[in-house]
Image (cartoon, rainbow, N blue to C red; front, side):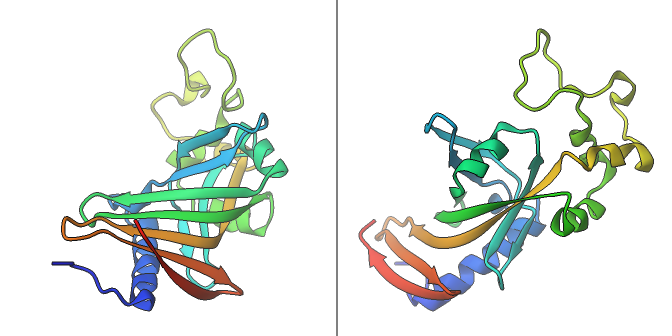
Length: 201
């Protein structure tokens, strides 16, 4: 027996609810999706990110990164991206096609920065940029900051590197796994209006 409502609108509303929870609850499975994009040499590049915000009105999913990261250079050249979520307990997978935009030293970044705790701001104070080659296993943080938070004033040095990547949802491929029968629904969004299409899983 299926444990889901097969009404597409109900499913879409549930997806939005799960994304809101995922952004707020660090213990929720949707808090750490996989973000994928094409690298400079046109090869797929994927990594875990932390979902910081979901705006159900603008249909944007946000995560934070360092402006010096190679993925920023990649996104400047190709904004077509995808986020993948999976909840083992709910048996729900989301493959979300997105268009990404970069926010650095603007209003969006400033608002998010003001809400970022010192322990997280510390990540943007690395002396070397992300993905730099190093002769020793290290995180790039200055020695005097090892195992402690920066001061509020000192943390502000990281603001130039702090970046919010906004990912506008284009479509959602929803998959529900069940021993009594899998279900798969494509949700395409045009001018914020959803269009539904059932697919064979």
